[in-house]
Length: 289
Length: 310
Image 1: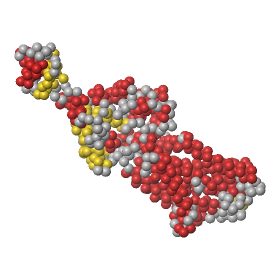
Image 2: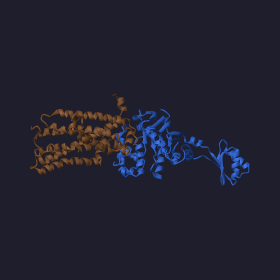
Image 3: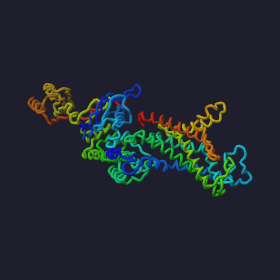
Image 4: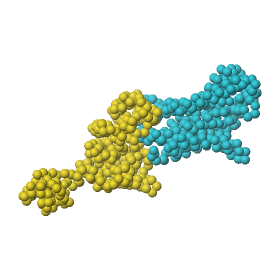
């Protein structure tokens, strides 16, 4: 790019400060009371788990049939509080958090009338979708990291740290354990980003953010429900949520990469398809809100 | 550089089978304050949304400040301030933060000057004291003012204002009028959509009238007024005789009541009418030439009645 072009075309985020619009979007999400309250609820779950296990220990430390994944390992190492909380919250709480952000993304702006003013600033519609999606993905990561972080702290306080005994029986150091926890957070963020892409598309269809959020949660629930019907097992690998619980494979030694790779590919496919759909829909839409 | 700040050619929008805007050829000269008049539902807002690229015309096209739209949106819209169909802001952000967000979204805006520009815009609309209040706590008039401040965040060459005095008290209305005058004096072109005729008479240099999706009149305010046939009004204690004389002179639509007679002057010079009346022995206690007021013309163009155009 020549100097003239650089001068003629200001940087992505406005003159002077890079990514100014993206920052504004993130602060809009972060300052919203509803989102703060939601994050607090997400953080409460691992604390409840840790206290419950601590109070019941050692008699019921074994967990028993039907107990959530990783629960039985908690008394051995506090790290497992984070994992148990993630395993519980990935089914409903984390998807609801993403659905709330994604539902709001375009429909929320349309609903309060800010969409028409953003577009006449002007914000190019593709740029608006890109910033909105970046906000959703950032929100998904922060939500996941909050669950993991609170779980880790609560677990370390109540049960202590030390070497981590993996599902496959081998033992790794606490440092590697933390690395793997981070990898799990990133994997789950990718999974939730796929739901976020579906959500962004849904959000371009309506001016009612609450309706969009409910629709996104229903998509998520439908995927879980279809996933437990054995008669349609041919469909299962294509379901949005099919690979999500495979985050546990990152805790094997050696790591079971195959399902993780499938999960990431599946998420990428959902992201590409639904972001394209959102772009096609929103790019051509008459904004009458 | 073209002479027009807003120029459209056959701009048309259909929603399903309904034609909301039908082949509108707008021509807003640079520097004009253009009153965009029309009853509710006549297609004003749809036209404005098309001008700003919010909705796509079914056919036809337009240019803003000489740039074809929507292709030129990225370069031309930063120079256009807009108020479309009322204020739209995040309820839980303060007025100040709402403007910060809009400024952050503008690629051409300098971050370093943002706070100063936002302050200036808020002061200009008289919202300086309420800048830190949440938008949801604003009254309708304050909301309208904030929307005007948003339209003035940067220096603009064109302002497209859809009913800017909606919800304002009489004092606020006056302030907005003087604001529009000041913007025009600074060289900006203003396209002002309204259904308040007094507003048009006081601030506009040009007028366009929409009716059922059609632009039924477009001219300078002066020309529109000149089109209105001036009437002669004679005050006399013998109105019937005065009416007869006026009729003989060639005035049309002559009527009389208790103490006066009126008629459309047409080509007859008013001096001649007075001379003839006096010559024929009709005592004239008063004589005036009155132009039809804008309201009558407006009604003539758009029809009577309270029905919203469908």
